[in-house]
Length: 441
Image (cartoon, rainbow, N blue to C red; front, side, top):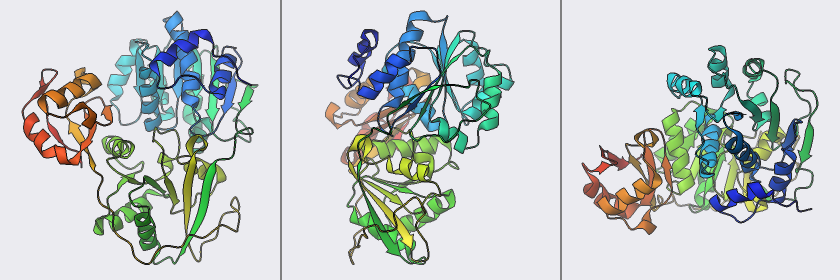
């Protein structure tokens, strides 16, 4: 069934890189107009973020300051991604994003200005609630995005603090890519409608393959497997950050290009490494489950499970990084002989045979460029393009993905253009500010 796009929402399509919303998005947009709590269940990569952001943006734009919204997410990366998607709708509404590692005082001051939209993690939002910063007199809608992940991360107490700080008159929208067996009793509502697009979703064309090895040779086997992918975009999952660091050390000793991502890293390094992976400046990312959900990572060819997660939901979300929107993809399970497959997997999986010889891949033809100015300096993507073409002598077609953070900007450019560009931009100004330009290592 194709639900017609509500006419007021269709105007946002002019600002988005596609011509129509998908069936799930149209259905959710229509049903979210009601006042009853609504849970959306839909696969990873199906467009859940836009499904709730578009009606939110429309409602707030029409009625602010009489109405505003709060979006609660399990990770800072997801918070920042949602902020960027919201800004792509070009509403000119004020948004405040709150997460650990960000300046608390800056967030508190922004919250006092009564923003139209607040996005944040449970831990940081609960801190603001306890400090009396979360007043939001016009708060009409609360979105719990990737809600099951928040519960898995153990945010029960923080969520309760946030809910207790609200007046109880809000509408609730919840999203998840996996069904929940039961809902916690601290939620400020008892009954909710469920819009389930999991049960009707077509089979993902995902090939699961088993790579057998010994415990002693497991890291070496992983490296040989990765070399066999010949620079195709690959995400390696581990259960713990220690394993990520151990693999990274081994890859570095063998001069194998890669980056890592886990919760123990500084936020600026996490953002930089994610950007490099998104932009193609890095083809291999070794990560914990921090990279398994909600992150704006383009089509990934291979997902490798160096360590298998104990629960099926985590396995599903990891694999959701590839075969997104039911495209084809490859998933590999690296299993030592003494390790056994978990109960949620079939015991008979096709085995992948590695070639005897392998070659360490070359680095990407793109590099990540760092510029020491960002959103706080009023820098836009147009400013960056102008700076790199006029001051750096780049052709516009040579400028790849651009990411503008609060105090820094990252840009993907061809490696063979770097030295000339660095020479040309040395000591130059961007938006009347003298900036440092360097390769982000």
